[in-house]
Image (cartoon, rainbow, N blue to C red; front, side, top):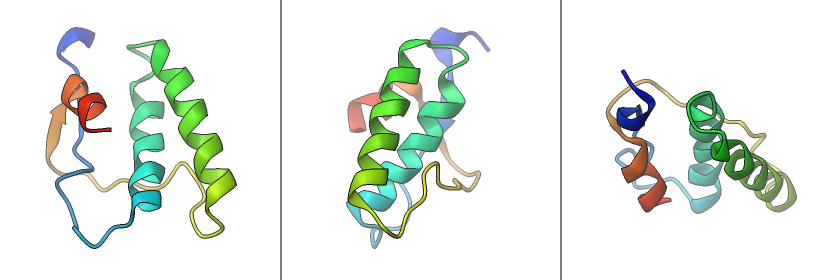
Length: 80
């Protein structure tokens, strides 16, 4: 699969009881996994990681993300 058509785990389609910090923590993981294709994702990853570490005493980024539904990297970034 080319990087232009890269799919990532859909973290926004899951449990509606997740809070914003948990979603951001999972987004950190998705950004980390996608950085091999898109170098700018490393900056997104570092910013999300910093945010989660400063704002949450519960979550330790990157958070585990269960395999499941996927979405395009573009849709993930739009939803983020």
